[in-house]
Length: 313
Ligand code: NDP
Ligand code: OXD
Image (cartoon, rainbow, N blue to C red):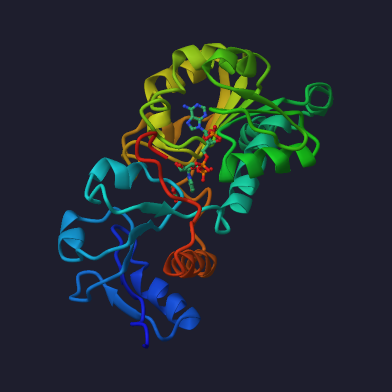
């Protein structure tokens, strides 16, 4: 007996990537059926970004909701996916390398005094600071050692920086001194000059980058946040920048997004603001991963990337 072709509904909120996703999927799986939400297709799988409840009400036979991104804080907070439908997220899918590039850029920006040189250029000042840079190679501390953070830490270590990493359970990353759990957090922070946030946003990590964490870093440290805006307590970050506890920051994520026009971070001389581009989802790699996951599920195999709703990532 011939098996029915797999049918997929694709939905997105915000940037409209739906036609491009369907096109990329069709190239890989021309025989499958596709619908762009809202549509009448009775789907087996949904590829979604911040999906409405109605999508699940109208597709009662869904076998899984595939989150079109690595972070699942948005989909979990919406509570639109019924409890019996597994949520599966993207794992790396070409994003980890971009993250490593982004974080390395921030590390070098701080280490090689680019902030000072940018300001000097505005005033036409010719003054070298490299003696300090040679003496003071910053130690980089990466929070979160998963698909993104693990790759980021390894790449920065391979580039020659001393790197520490921190996660919930103890991880092993080549060339990286690993710490785990709240009991090792202060030790991790105490020698971290560039703090990189690669955590998922959960109830345990919300607001983690606040006054207490920042005060535990050496004076004049640098912050890179590519996790989520709600990891930071923004007023505490601004206060640390004001006091010099933070020498500067490279920030990609904010609460809310877009960053409001009147937000002080836009014009802070020691802050670089980027519009959530640290790692964008490459359509071809993401779709290849999605097809692989669906094929495994269709064969009754286990797939990786299933979200544990009880921990929030
Ligand atoms: P993973 O789930 O693969 O990794 C999460 C890591 O965080 C794990 O090492 C985990 O520990 C650790 N962690 C979770 N909770 C805690 C905690 N309470 N204390 C200490 N460590 C904790 O996620 P990804 O690496 O794929 O993605 C991370 C985040 O990056 C996403 O959730 C998203 O918010 C963000 N992101 C941002 C993008 C951007 O462009 N700015 C693009 C893509 C993702 P353990 O290993 O023990 O489980
Ligand atoms: C993601 C993101 O989570 O783009 O994938 O932030």
